[in-house]
Length: 289
Image (cartoon, rainbow, N blue to C red):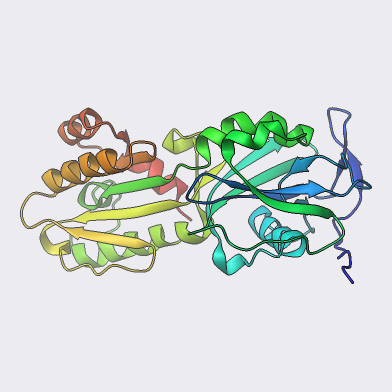
């Protein structure tokens, strides 16, 4: 028998706009995207809020629960989606000041099996993106879908000019360039868990979880990679390597957000001419955990 699970976040609230919402500490849901562009949607039970409509598995957050954890938990409870199968790529927040809903966008390597696994789900279905609006959608999901449909398939690819970023902060890097590069690498590796805020990188939404590429040169060439961070060692010219890497990423993944991090004016121009975007070291360093 399927049972409803309770948290301390369960309960109705009225937001600053005068709307009634479920979730004393806000709510979150998981928009899961397959490589073929299909989205995993939930047909809501008739007795639930906006019952009979379609949206994403989701629900109230508990008092100590980040939105990403809440969305993964709800998807497992309502659609039998295993968190281990999911890679988070971005988050979007519908902010009503005293209440918010976070849509956590994630990808899977293929259409993973899913099914109704608690009474809140009438049906769980993979729906091609072009057919989503043919369904009677939950009002909140309907208002967000236009932008989500455009952004959900996209990834953030971060290309970091390590020498330039190291040189922007006086942490003694000139005494040990390899050690300073390792410290920066380890900081950036934390984004695999926490993501990066969208605004400093010129991106829409709330946060993005990047695919990270570090370009190193000189005394930092022996920097090893770490999970979530790929390292590219330049035999001579790090700027040339980063420009080539940016051009290759744009060519291979034209719909993704390709963002390079450097303050070098000439390199910035070459990267922008290749079709990628550029932010300065400060934007990255301020955003790192």
